[in-house]
Figure 1 (tube, chains in turn green, orange):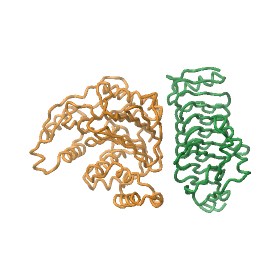
Figure 2: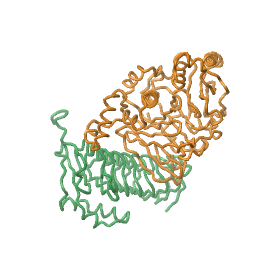
Figure 3: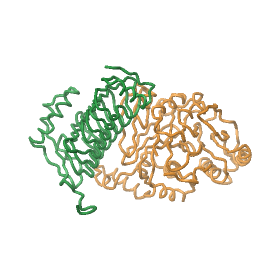
Figure 4: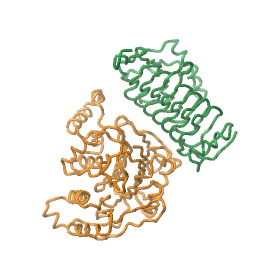
Length: 240
Length: 364
């Protein structure tokens, strides 16, 4: 385990040091540096302080643990690996990710999971412990987005216009979502036993990371959202 | 060299603000340093600051901050100013020579009071008179530009990175109860001193991150009321819209926010609070041409407070935090942490949800 004080490092040098270390790392004094651990394929990186935008972009197998809030576009286009945020996350989390997992202890900003996709054996997963902002899963094409709405109080589990343009993947929202308006091209239904089995391992992992009780969460009802067909937009442009 | 208004280049930017609800004054140094973590959001073509409460010894006078391209222009412009104002103080704005900031124009400030006789003959109130004079100078005096015109506040801007602009203008020598800051990444215009943010009119200032797509629609409407958009930058038009809605039309800040970041009709239709619903229908119907579309996050500064606002789709980031009497607003949490490592209650306002913070009564 190597510890690096990154207070005065800009992102290029920071990432060079990180790759050169070739071992698990603890980064201290982080303040807004972008692209941390971009493209990294192995090792675990623990970050103290607030990392900048595009944390773990193109991540390819490494694990990132953030002990604070994270900013925008975390896990942009990530392919494999794990990102764990012990706080809230900014906008466009998991932008176009196609593999790996993102666990967020608290709330997510706007457009979480925008254009998330699956590819062959890869299927990305994002678990949001709190509530999500508007446009959750915008243009979602694959993978799973799970929102638990823990400690939401009177806040809605997701803001306006969720699933706009969604055409693949699945979304699991805790509760009956009666106060949420979904677009026409998606179907919502109560989660059955099979659906719950699909998310059980992810919820358990969330709970072990952040100290919650998985049984209590899994006893709740969940709403499953999925697109009506594989290609709901095929008539929009050309017949194909 | 091409100036603002002569060419349009098809932005990222950084904004930050801090205010003390108790009216406690702080120097401009801290906010300038806070722009450092967001360095990459700018490209060195503009940085600027607005400080409120910085001129208590001249608080009853309009502080005109001006750029002149040469000494002769200043002399000509001064003749014009003396026909309209009593000038109680006129001085060069102190700056520091640093390699990061070059090609500076002549930078001057005047503390002025409109001549009563001129106001009486024009039958204008003081603010309207000052606003019209600013417009006149900025459109009719080539080489002269008023970039700040409020009372007990001032903007400081330049071509350069914001942290360097702060050093250039010696912001550590000013103390204000609120500050806004901007790092510029110009996308539509070439980047000239006058085009840096904040944009101001009277004590209203705007720092803006974004790229509004309704610029021409907004401009055509607002120019009907005497405003002249001389710089082709979208921030200028937002400043005039806020002046028109708040000062001229008398809307509250919240109402003005509902005009420029109006909710979708479908969102209004779903509102359950009928009074709120009616109000939104009224505002959208009355001011359709002042809806600002496209991505923006702005901080609007005024004497006694700040308002932060995102576009209704929230296409730009913005976070708010607080600590004791202070409230912080920024494009990135990292900048808030740079100002106050122990900031609390960090949250992101929703698109179109204004955050209004005022200094408590009598504290400014």
